[in-house]
Image (tube, rainbow, N blue to C red):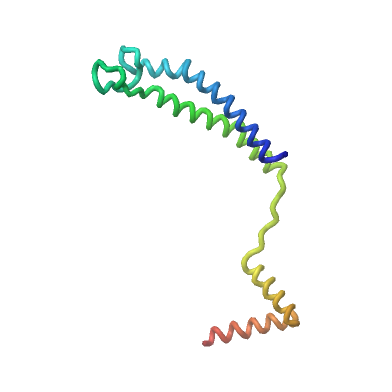
Length: 138
């Protein structure tokens, strides 16, 4: 059970734990700063739709705080987990062999077909050239 499953489990646990830290930071610091921009009532930053009815208050502070929470978690997880993993994978990971080009694959197919028909590679190349010149002339 090594590899991606364990990495994913660790990332979920760390993300959850860090979300709690960011949420407390937002409630303790960001919410009071956003309330400064609100009116003098207790409700904070937002819009009162009907005067005198607190139930019609649209609170913008919690929405802004949620966006800040999300971006803080995303930034920290990116720089703490993803970038180091990417650099480690690039440094110690396996390298991929270069994939053959389309022309190389076609040559390989041609040679395999020639082998099945009992022709040599030279005969196949000559036959290919004859067919190409015939199609150009036509």
